[in-house]
Image (cartoon, rainbow, N blue to C red; front, side):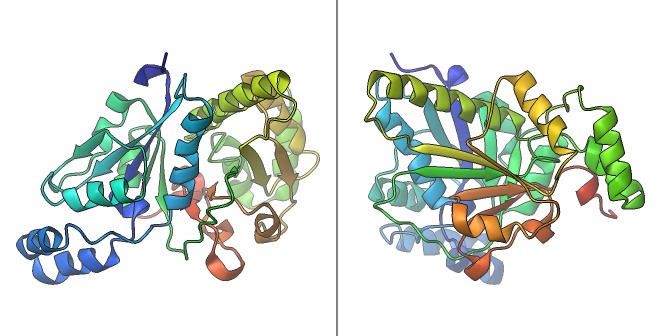
Length: 311
C-alpha cells in the first residue's frame, strides 16, 4: 500500500526550477500578463527545455520505481501560473514522463503558504522572493541558481550534497564565527559544546527523510546482495578538526548519517563537488556555490547570519 502524503517525502518544485522559462518570462516582462497568456496558449504543445532542478527531480521520482508498493516520495508542482497558462507546464511534465500529478496554480501569487498543506520537505524555486518568504515562515526552501543542465539518462544514481551549518544545522556556530571572523573562537565554541547536538536547520527534515530512504535501500540490499543503491548523500562542510566532532554528535542524535562526509577546513568545495558530481548541492553561502564549468545544479539556502542583509 502506498504511503499517504503525510508520510511521504514530498518536494515542491516551482515551474521556474523544473523548466527553463527564460523565454516566456521575458515575454511577461516585456509585454505583460495578457501577451504572456497568449504566448503560452499559442505554444502549449511546445515542450519546455529542462531546467536546473530537472535532473534531480527525475531521479528523485525514480525512487518510486524501485519501491512501487510503498511509493515513498512525491513531487508537487507549485506555480504562479493560472491553470490555463500552466497547461504548457503540465504538457511538458507529461512529455518527459515525470510522475507529477498534484499541482497548485496561484494565478500570480506566491505558492509558498501552501507548502505545509502538501507536507513538503523542500520547496525549490528560481524566484528569490518566494524562497526568502518561505524561509521566513520556517518552511524549507532553496533558490536554484542558473547553470547548464546536464542529465545523463544512463546514470540512475541520485547524488545529493549538503553544506552543514545554516543548511542541515542552524546558524549557531556560524554566528559565533561571524562575530569576529575568528576560526580559533569558532573551534573553541564547538569543542566546548561538542556533546550538545545542534538545533535543526532549514533542510534538516529533508536530510532526515532522505536517510529514511537509505534504510529502505539497506533492507533491499540485505534481501538481495546484488541490489545496487540508487541514493548517495554527502555532507561537504568548511569545518575541520576539532569542530568536526559536533557534526557527528548532531547526526548521531538524530539517528542519521551521510554516505560521504568531507571536512575541508576552508578548502574550495568545488574540488570535491567535481568528483562527487551531485545532482543538487545546497549551501547557505553564495561564495561556496560554484563549480568548474558551471554544470552542477546549485541551490542557495538564504538562511541565517550568513544571509543577513540591509532591507
